[in-house]
Length: 195
Image (cartoon, rainbow, N blue to C red; front, side, top):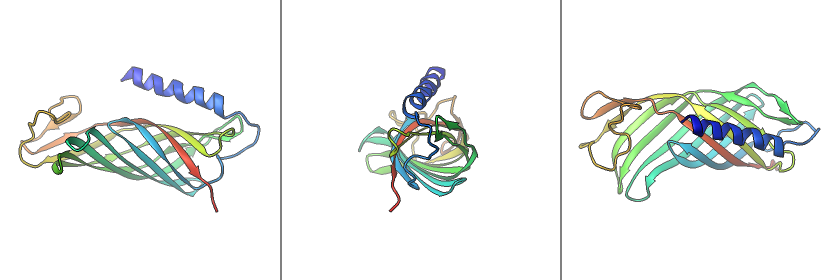
């Protein structure tokens, strides 16, 4: 886990040095909507954000982990992020945002849900806007979380990830558990220009 975090931080710092090389102040190409890829733990998926104003943005993540069409976890996460610090690195605004989020997830076996869960999170995200490539935006994020899962029927199928993990789950009974699986990831998004 420490190595993964070190790689993310090094990638982020190197990219900010390479791409944000301008004496002009700016926030990418000025678009309010950003869409792109999310690569992280516990899922890989799509990221979308809409800037409501300079201090607040709506955030949506949709992703999946596992074997497609056989056994996978599907996550949908939504939240509001608030800018708490906005340093300017070589002319580009690089905001640090924090806010509340909610994640709804389901363990799917073939096409039937085997469990459903809900988690409360607090994403901490740092973004870099590029002057050389203003249409793109890179971010790194860590989101502590706590939630619960409810299992439909047998929870001991052999392909269920983390069902009995003592690190991230605490079994309450045969159908419920409390979990604290953090979301950690790196995203690259395209900033859609305003019309």
